[in-house]
Image (cartoon, rainbow, N blue to C red; front, side, top):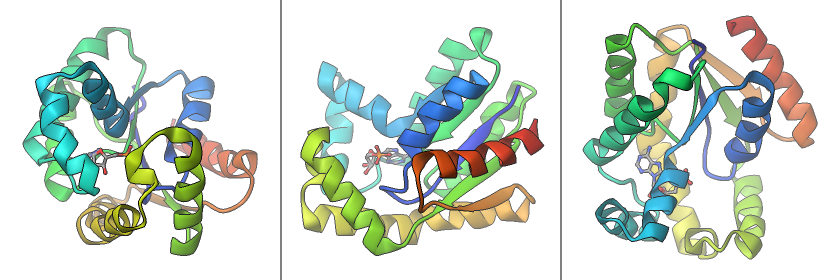
Length: 192
Ligand code: AMP
């Protein structure tokens, strides 16, 4: 199995690049933001719980996220040749929990690909996406600011965690979608 984390701040292009990665490498996509939005749309208890955090651009509690990811891995493992984790892990405890979950299954993270994009560009992209995404957290300046702040304070340490394991690869995330994908895929090829 090839298990990869696609990492980066909100608006870095993780969703867009994930689609291309899945297509080329036939990996299973686990995007925690998408999973929460699905729960929200279906009105599940998990969706209701997550909503108040998402509405403010804050992180959903670790145990909730980890439980959801664990379930998703169990559901898909038999038919999967590997995972691309997108928007997860977002805290060091989530990263440690993911390592444990994978270890129990005889698996590990091969690498973390981190998209680096300047803050002004992130804000521009998120607002642009907000015109069509229907996401309230993409349309409000204060929520966007908070998501970037939460990323810097709570999520960035996750990159250091994987760097310490020699698994971090940084990629400049500005340019055309195909250009960036070209850089990502040459890094993934090295991990295979
Ligand atoms: P995203 O689609 O990745 O931008 O996520 C949207 C929102 O879902 C975030 O602002 C958080 O409120 C929540 N969320 C998604 N993934 C996580 C995670 N791994 N940990 C905590 N909260 C998350």
